[in-house]
Structure formats: structure tokens, C-alpha cells
Length: 124
Picture 1 (tube, rainbow, N blue to C red):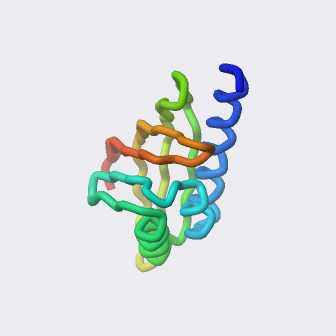
Picture 2 (cartoon, rainbow, N blue to C red; picture 1 turned 120 degrees about the horizontal axis):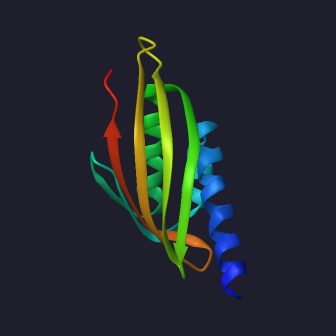
């Protein structure tokens, strides 16, 4: 696989994650991660596909709506960074929160093995 092929595969994986979060689909979120993946958010670290799936499902119970606007994707081999603008609306009270979100990731065999989020919340 050449450099451009690897970059295209990583972009496909990232856009699939974006679609899974917007669609509030915990199974689709988890499907992008290896069995031994580590997902680190500002709240907690989740190890393994099953734990990542459960964390996503728990979040989707809270969030009635999610919007994601990709700003940039940078890759170097099987590692990279994605920056996106995140919007979430709480199901319970309709409160909307937005953030600038940067994610550092690593891919192995077509799946994420590491995902670390850095979030800058904008009020709300």
C-alpha cells in the first residue's frame, strides 16, 4: 500500500467515525476500533472495543443530536491528527455545547488502535 493509499484509508476510517457519531450508532463507532484499542477522552480512558462501544452508547443516551464539521486531517504513515468542530445537544434539556476537538490517532490493520481527544469547550 502506497502513501496515498494509506492516507485515503485513514480518511475513510475517520469519515466513518464522523458518520457513526452523527448517527448516534454505538456499533458503528466500535466497529472502527481494534479489539485492544485504547480510546482516551478528557473524561476517561476506555480499553477494548466492547468498552468503547459501551461508552459511545452511554453518551448517545445523553446526546439527542451531534454535529461534526471536519477542519483538517494530517497523516504520517499510520498515525495522524484530525481537527473537527463538535456540537452536541442534550436530550434532557436541549442544552447545546460546542467545542474545538483535536484527536491524535494510530491505525493498525485498518482499525484504530489509539484515539486520544483534546477538547476545548466554547461556553455553555
